[in-house]
Length: 234
Image 1 (spheres, rainbow, N blue to C red):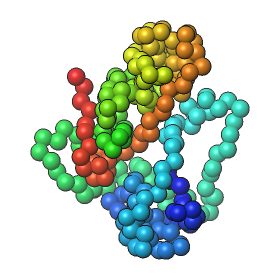
Image 2 (image 1 turned 60 degrees about the vertical axis):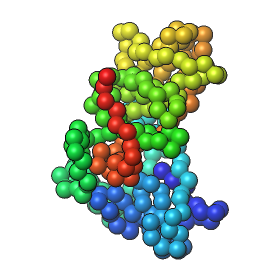
Image 3 (image 1 turned 90 degrees about the vertical axis):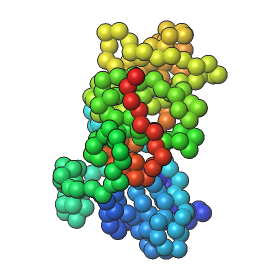
Image 4 (image 1 turned 90 degrees about the horizontal axis):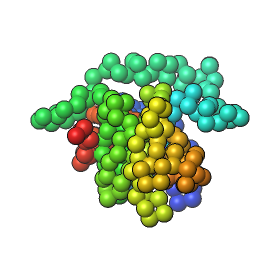
């Protein structure tokens, strides 16, 4: 998700095409083309410019509703639009299409393996979604930042958090007898929910800093992050 402005000037963006199953957007103001996954202008007068990212979550609707019991705004496309027709079952259809990717020796993942991609301090790392389902919470350090990745009980929604709080690094583990999205920290025994908020114990009310995550196919993540690291279970 990106801010649709450059140098304070709003841009009107629309779908211009698809590059190896990744959207290309075109702005009406300059005709420049923008890559969906990177937010970078790849063609036109603004080539090389970068849109500013907007932090967002990618959650199942059930998880979103549980966290917002009083409701909220849901955007729904008009049934008569061309976009509605184009996007219907898009994920299922594209999953069957061939992809262009550079084969690497000893690559342990197939191109369409779903991964969760993180970027920290200009470093990138991918975590296979299946590994997270088996090992949530997943504790790691990369880019010099200790972090924890947590999967909701729906098996789809994923969030990541820095585990340093007020200068102290916390160690997290799943709360016994609970879903893997309920955490405890070893230092204070506080309980944490899927939003990264301490809901009980010494640190009740404190909030962990979120790290942006992107669910993507391995071939796509690696194409736009060619030096990415890949998590492997120890």
